[in-house]
Length: 145
Image 1 (tube, helix red, strand yellow):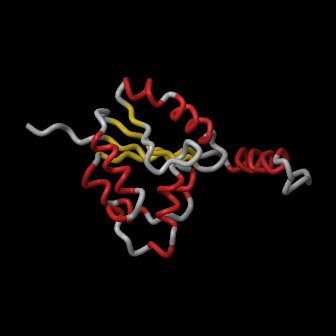
Image 2: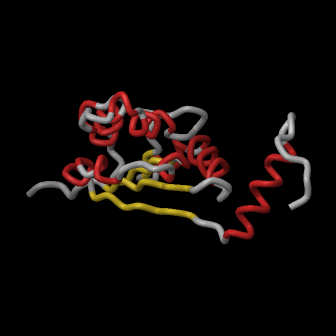
Image 3: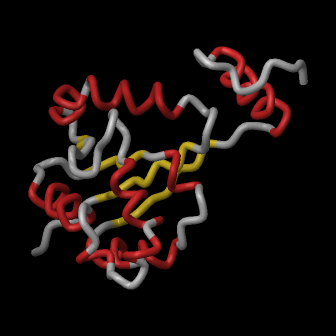
């Protein structure tokens, strides 16, 4: 009898939906979560998010490379397969930026893939986005909305 396929959750936290906070929480608690069956993979991480994975997908120079050869995706798949946890979560805001979902199809051959997307209402998004610009060290925008 074969073991059930592992679940792989792709967290597509669009910008300004507390994704950075969630990623930090997952990274800081990776050991505790791992003991409870959830893997937050190290492969492809930059600053607690899986930006290297999405950067590889968006790199036009590598658009013809299959996912199983597109570094760091093979490393991620290997890490998830080798881990004892039945569930892995991958998180990046950049998944929401013009990534062709068809490129991710090979993941379905290996894992039970789930996608979680967080959205904000347009008015809340604009307010949060504006507030971010204002509080940056060198404000890009100082006018009122």
